Length: 460
Image 1 (cartoon, helix red, strand yellow):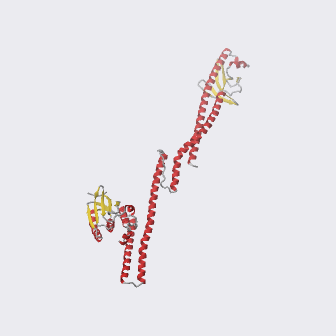
Image 2 (cartoon, helix red, strand yellow):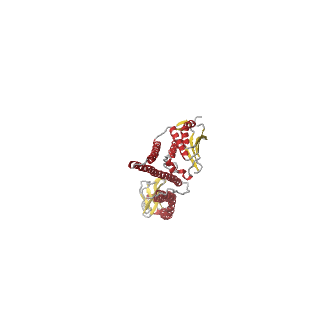
Image 3 (cartoon, helix red, strand yellow):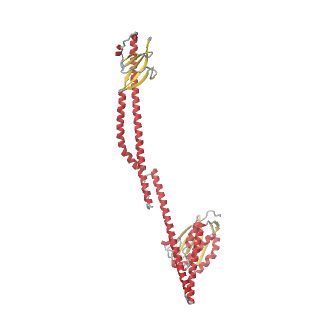
């Protein structure tokens, strides 16, 4: 059963039971009040007839010694009955013979009440002792309360009519109220179905601040997280596909050439210069494949190994690194300018060295004439800047340069034994160090790279 139907039927059932119970209690209360009023009136009648009987007994004390009591019938204002002290009935002008006196509950005046209903007639019997001189008898009077009972029945019938009418009117109102209450939940359900169908940008628009509004807000946050995760998974899947395709391509081209030249050397007698040329090509492609395998091995190691970071002086690390960066710059005809200030960061030296050497190698291979490396404290971080004046990187390609096998200039990279994995390694090392990296270039005047390392734990 749907929630709408559950709420609707619960409202109808609750309203019906509550209204019916309230009506029954109200009618019962009204009937009780009416009976109490009738009891007061019946007691007044009893008292009046008691005084009349006492007066008669006072004037005619021997009246009860006779056997004909019919002349007493006109003396009472309501139907009455007389009993001797032993309970013997000596007179009654009631339609039915009442039970022996004393069967009901007595009040402070010594009167007893009993309500009796027979067929369509309902009455209140009042009993009490009457003493006059030596005479001791029981007097019982009957007061008709059929009008109060009939009024109760008419009230019940009238209430049932009102009850049915109100139920008929309340059904549409309860239906509308239930529709309003479940409307927001239905919105959530429809949005969930659209998200399940692939529309991950779906959101619920609701202005309510109640529990349903909070549910919608939580659902929107969940949908946002799902959308981000799906986008991230899609990027990962695309990167894996690109990685596989690029890896296969990077292997296919040199291997095809190597196999072709090797086959030619084996099958044909070639002049010495052609043999040297073919062997040189095989050597270059072999070196590129070796570089590719080493870079891939480094990536796998970085993904599978935990590294211990130790706090080291940046200036001392670069003094050692200068011995490796200098020859690289000299080989490509680029000038090296270093300005490293004091400061210490948490680092793993070998990884840090690999990161800086890769960035320097990329810079000088981009036809840079100068390479500037600087470092200093800025706020709560230590910033290292690596700036070159080479060809730069087109701004539209900056978002992909850390992807595996991605190369801005593929022909130049292959000539220099590049595999498109350098910046992938660098980004992984930056992540291991908990640092931040920003790459900026206009594609014409070189590239600027900023590395920010936290200074937490540094001792002055």
